[in-house]
Picture 1 (cartoon, rainbow, N blue to C red):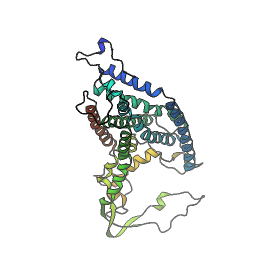
Picture 2 (cartoon, rainbow, N blue to C red):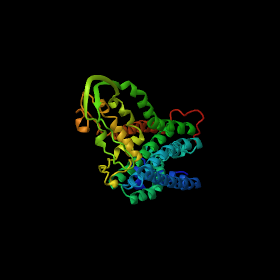
Picture 3 (cartoon, rainbow, N blue to C red):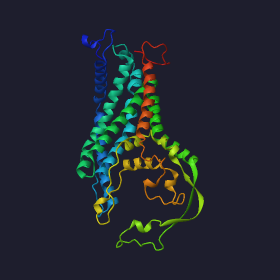
Length: 385
């Protein structure tokens, strides 16, 4: 479908180009009409709605199993994090396929040249296609809103955290769509553009985990520590005995100092920063968990999957002494006893999101250059019209 080449005079700038608002509106409208015209889009959303329902049901069942009948604090956050995590996971699978064919598909069909000779600039054309694919990807997030509302009704969920979660998932979908749209403009073949986009997504999601796992052994260091002395009699825990954590804690440290090997991941944890799941999980403020009270079972609840990811990344920022009992002959009971150089409360999501945006911006600039018409050189086999 060709874009309207007869805009109103107020929309055309003196140099003969459309304003950004008019150009983006035309491109987005054209792209969305092409997507919504097919029945498969609605079938996919319907299937997605059913799948999210099954994930929600499974989350509630898992929470009840973990918490038990006597421990219950409201499954809302646990269910919400499971739904949001699955939406992000599914978005990483769907967004590349939806965005990586926007430009390369038009180029293969011979319709891209028709749009290039309109009053829209290459930057406007590429940005409009990106925004259209982002809007389409957000449809999956909108389809999950009923289950997010259900999580709020179940209780245990703070509204500010909910808003940040949803916004960060939307931002991540936008970044992935930007990568796919840019690659689609750079690569001439649609199949190769989709594969290249999936490889970039895999680099951010799986590549960061693999890189961290491979470099973790290289951070091995030694910490002098001696032996911890525990109470002589350990309590027997059964159904009739209350658990007392103080009875299991070491009393003191004694004996000669012996070097113990331990990982110091403070120099490599940043590799996980660009992971989409880490970016979303780490951006949400941690909820204040009430202290566990054996006499009040309502003060405990299992952590959700996203909170666990954020806690794990913060844990990797601790100094090695925090993971060794009786390090330097001292008992470390809480964070106040850790060395001053500890950075366990440093958020990593700004760094990760910055890396993602920088990569997307570089590819976007490259893709824009590939859309400049007339082209000095066309790839072999390219259809112009």
